[in-house]
Structure formats: structure tokens, C-alpha cells
Length: 333
Image 1 (cartoon, rainbow, N blue to C red):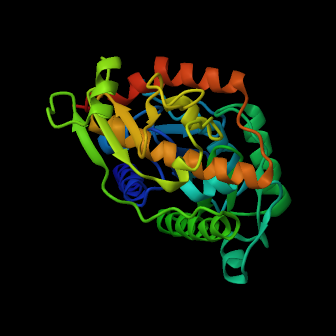
Image 2: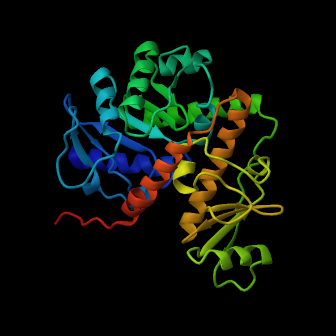
């Protein structure tokens, strides 16, 4: 049973990656073992590199077994499992449109078929709190107790979803994303184009255009640059600030037309910078998602995350999670 649960979590994480519901080390998953324990994903690890031995067994009081540190949201998972005996699988996603619509000011009424699946006539929004902190957890539990919803948006952050199985939780995450995209498009004046393959250059490429070569010259730490003409990002005219905390983590406190951050406005394109292709693609995903959220921020007159929270999360990511992502884990003998 242990091996089956561990592999089920990993397999589900791969589908979440494929469906663009999580990226890199963001988000987390867990599955109940019994009435007092569950397995969850480790802290700060890339989903593409997960192995069964990294799944952490956690008790409902927050204690855990072994040397691998579990997700910082393990206490939130424990609270949900304690509150809802019907919860067997939990997904915390950073899915793009749900994250964008988390900037709203009140719950969203949902269609009857979706209401039946989430157990609530509306999709609630939990008040903002820093990841892993009691303020966020208390806000989520308050929304859960008030509505009974199996899906809750986390302001400026993402969504948390629970269900009776991994398949049900995944299906619900996809339906929530579809609903949130429709809500976004109903309010937005700029509609995202369908995703396209970005242009890509590496430091050794002699074919890089002058604008790209200039970025490489200024940023010796950068080895890969991706580019696209994302209309949602370009709508922010050379300045984009964090409306989502993962933008603050990976990009910084603002994105302009000078390459001091990991994303840059060019003349007619947006450039995404990374130490390798994976990093550049992650920046691209996060910037696009933050631009969706900033669009809704304008619509709802919601403020960006605070300067203090942005600085804190950028520091935590650089000093902690970015290192955990690439840290090798030894398999049990």
C-alpha cells in the first residue's frame, strides 16, 4: 500500500505538470493513509525529479518520519484531513486562471453541475497569507467551514482542492480552471493567445539578435533566453509588479525593460532569462500567470502583494527552495 500511494502522488504530479496546473517546485500534493496519517510531497523539490522515497509520512499533528522535509503546507493538509473525513487526496495548485481569479473580492457563483461537484453554490476565496503560515491556513479553514467547498481559491497564490481520489481531485482542478478562464475572459479586454513555442537562444548562439546579445552581455549568470509576444504581458507596457507570490519568488519585485530581473520587456517581445532552458521556461510560465493576475487586479482594484512580502519570498526562494530543487536525493537501499 505504501509504494502504491507514493507512486500515485508522483503520477498525479506528472499530470498536473502536463496540464500546466503546477510548475517547478510550486504547489503540493498528499494522499491519506488512514485516519491519522498521510503521505505528502517534499519541500522544494522539482516534480520531474520526484522518487517514491521522497514522499513523507506525516501525522495529523504535523510531525513526520524520516530526514526528508515535507511541504511547508503539511499543516494545511493535516487540517483539511482532520476537518473532512471524506478527503482522501489533496492538491494545492498554482494553476494560471484560478490564481488570476483569486484576486477577486467575493466568491464566484458557479453553475449547478460544478456546484454539485464542489459541494457549494459558490467558489470561495480565502484571504491572503504568506505560504505555510497560520494566517493563510486559518483563512482557508474559515472558507471551508463556511461553504463546505471542495475547492478554495487562495488569494494571490493559487487553489486548494480535495476529493475522494486523485482522479476526482485532478478532474475538479481542471474544471475549476475552465470555469476561472471563462470568468477571466468575461472581464478582460486582452485575451491570451493559444500557447506557442517560444524562441530560444543560448549564450553560445552566434545567431542571437542584438537585443538578446545585449542581455547576455549584461547578465553573466544567464545561459538561456526565451522570448514570445504574449499580449497579456505586453499590455503592461514595460512594468509588471508581483500580484502572485511565485512571481516575487522567481522574478523579483518588478519587471521592466532593463535586465536586472529574470524577465525583461523588449521592443516587441518579452524575454525570459534562466541559467538553463528549464529555468527560462519556468520564468515564462510565472510571468504569464502573474500578468493574468495583474489584469484581474486592475479589474477588481486589488493591490499587488506588499513590498515586504515580496522581498521575503524572493529571499526565501533564492536561499532555500532554488537549492532544494536541484539537490540530489539518495534512494533507499
